[in-house]
Image (tube, rainbow, N blue to C red; front, side):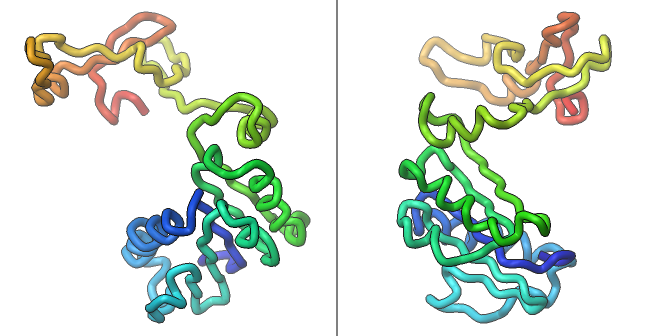
Length: 193
């Protein structure tokens, strides 16, 4: 938005979820970032719920992918699509067509989602990617290890016979095991980078 002002389309599964994300997450984050000082229009009201205009010429449309009409008519340089597994069939393909005009000028589509069902549209796009996983580097063996709940351990006494959890005990006893060398580490942000 700052360095390369361009039209952007943000999609969520429904119009309400799209507006909610922009109003409660995106816009507050932009307003706190000094790079965006003075760029975000101060215009408010219903007309700005689905469109954010920036003083440098960038425009952000936030729409719901559930309505096919929201995926047509606009040419965008950046498509940001969230929770794609919830989109109706063929709506991801239709959304990606929005970047055609900018493909030779850095047009990008970013599809973000949890997994859907095998064989559905989002699954097909996922299978075309390199399918990288978030990893951490084991300080003991140097291998990169994918995050997995199977490798997490904590003091089981943190759960009483009624199923109540003592989260402080869980937090203080949390350990992570390297799947390569079996070394155990305190599960901290610093350790699992």
